[in-house]
Length: 464
Image (cartoon, rainbow, N blue to C red; front, side, top):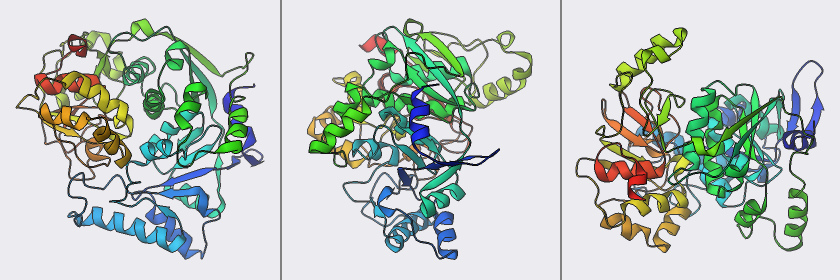
């Protein structure tokens, strides 16, 4: 086999259960406030301590408000979850990046930026978008609450080994085309179930040319194709990104680590269960029109007609058209929008804010648009201010909110009202995902910025 996935997986196998799962050692467990309370309760009931507490890092992100974080959380459910995580971390002796600390943010943004996520690791969290961390060359995947408890208690997990898939994207991405567009394109080609049962390795010139932040976005969305996770083989881009980070190896340890990381690649003779090839030239800036991330088109294209939809998919297609208020065959360029959201573990990094600012610089936000610009961490917030992007954004009429998952999901105050259209850089456009009755159009930070200044769906290439 000799795939990179096999190399990392095999190195972490503790034992294989005959006709059953593999017991896999886990290097890093990330914990947030939503999927952990029952796991901690289970540990208490059994009188257990965390087996390797130094491998576990916790922070609230889903329920944290993105304003007035220095005041008590108003929503009682959110407050209870955030307070419960703090207490559980104190009781079990775990590292806790709490609200109002410089280390807080979205767990999938903070992990890589602190050097906690490293090549060759196995990484899990009770959150489907854990696949994000695969960008550093790690096997990273989401797990359920009972599995969170399993890792706390044993630093191991029982897992069936997934099949391997390699997706090659040849050529160079065009002007205004980002990693987000690549991911949305792949989802439209594979559908939201096309990679079910697989772990995806992304490869090819377009991927190699991506920054680490672009790779984090690409891997983040692997789960939306049904994949167990996705990753990119570590290279010089990876090493440069990690070097000097707080938890990264230092000195001689760094040299040893890089020597090992350089071996982390699939062999020339590697055999994958499935291999797909795409051309970067076929990808333009993209938007979604439906109610799953695979229902997307190039920004210049039209929504498919009913005739283009396979027989068994017609009913759900029409249901999503009705929900979104769109018509089959309609072009969405110029369609009015109400909200813009920049943020989430998909696009809440400094590069995303730079991209957004590059379009709005010297222009003004459309008066009819409500814009939520939410950094993925306090470190991103500090960088925005260091680079003066806050001034650019404020002069264009935008306000920067405080870090958190925000309008990615309707678990905090940032909810899009029913019937309103939101161009969002987040990862899911399900019915009600951003608030009951809200209508989500997934897009890149460049598309979101263009919509924010025009008040309608606009090709960002017009401004580049």
